[in-house]
Image (cartoon, rainbow, N blue to C red; front, side, top):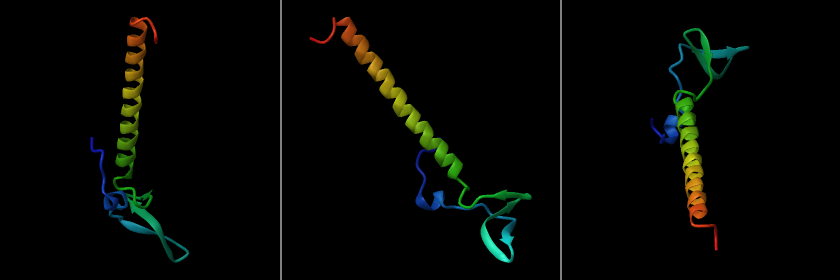
Length: 80
């Protein structure tokens, strides 16, 4: 899984089949295969998933490190 995305990748858009036009005004986003697609979401869901996964791994490492430290302190008879 990729964990780094460039600024341009984060803001990249899908190649829309047709734009979203309301009352003659072109709006952000567009349609792909007949479904509305939000603007700037080509890689955004992958980038968000990668960020959440990275944060989760950091939290897990901290928790397991803390458990290991507490277990070691317990084996040594406490602190002090």
